[in-house]
Length: 270
Image (cartoon, rainbow, N blue to C red; front, top):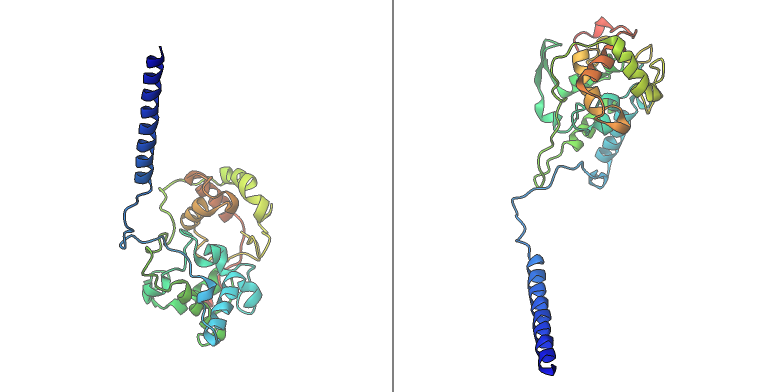
């Protein structure tokens, strides 16, 4: 009997020691990781404010950020609408598929179909002012223009250690037939809480979508086929992605059924 007990204890001890050895071996393997791949790049990130240089250039970039995000406050002389550049180019111009500013300078000069000629980045800024912000052109050599260009260039600075920015323009949606009546229901349920029952918005947080303080009928957003992709991907801001493509087209049609300022044809060159 004693011999049997000794044998059982020995077997148990061997099994226990074996389990410990195997466990340690597995643990040591789990701690192993292959060397870092120097070719693997991290995702794009916006530049940190610490990269803004000191002196006049840095001051101009910071001013450009203010102008971009609260245009009708810091450039009220040139922007009559209670809109800002950031109303459409969301998150300070870096939100993917919200017509972001990142990488934009490299695309200019370009042919603009609406204007019918080659335009510069400065020309494109003027377009936003006279159309989306229902204002007037800012002088090309003004501090305001220099500040906006410097801010956009700063957002677009090269990041060779990171992957390229993804999300230019808008998302691609199928061609759908919009229904403004259905869109009215979508607006009440999903939009009115921020943009108001009558589209008046709550500037500067939420821009007006129609009425005298909104973008005029010459703006890019005054096109259902442009507004719908923006809405589908970016709205509502606190629940992005909950709207279907059809709902985005419908609510865009409802918004476009409402009155808004008329574009000043004196600025048709932009």
